[in-house]
Amino acid sequence: MQDLPNLILVGPMGAGKSTIGRLLAAELSRDFLDSDHEIQARCGADIPWIFDVEGEEGFRLREVQMIEDLTAREGVVLATGGGAVLREQNRRRLRERGSVIYLFTTVEQQLKRVAKDRNRPLLQRPDREQVLREMFELRDPLYRATADIVVRTDRRSPRAVVNEIVRRVQRLVDPLQAKA
Image 1 (cartoon, rainbow, N blue to C red):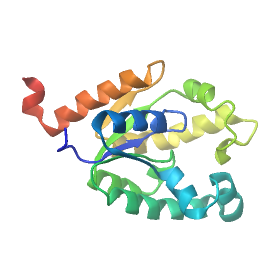
Image 2 (spheres, rainbow, N blue to C red; image 1 turned 90 degrees about the horizontal axis):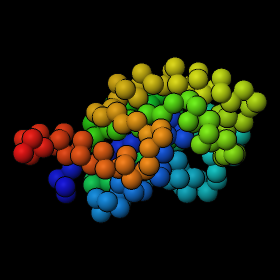
Image 3 (cartoon, rainbow, N blue to C red; image 1 turned 180 degrees about the vertical axis):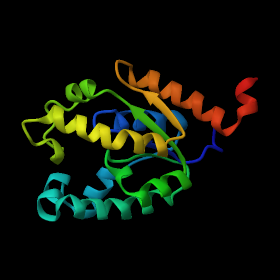
């Protein structure tokens, strides 16, 4: 599976991009990158601080540059932030530089997974469910338009999701071998 392109995970917060990305990278003996973590490392500040000081727009500008930099690497598994698909420039770059996998999950599952997480600036409001539903309505079509593969993650183990991704990506790369 060394001839696989970059594998790029997109999806909403709480879909499991970081967890599944780490497992997938280990399974394929690849480097794992997380665009949000890389932004924090480069800035020396966490995402809530960046949002407080620069606003969402400032964060999104940093994200564009980070997507550009990280997708230029080869043979990696990249987990993107949930809002990375909001910019056409990012969607185009993701499609050009790898196979994009949309990790789909329901809003209900997101609520369970991010219930105690205080590191998500867009959810620091009492109406979390409404915020997640509005983000889903806006972003789901963008994730789908960007993705080569859609994989459900709700009520599934990360290992089961990784196994499905490996099978489906192999079919993308070598459809004849997948039928053998």
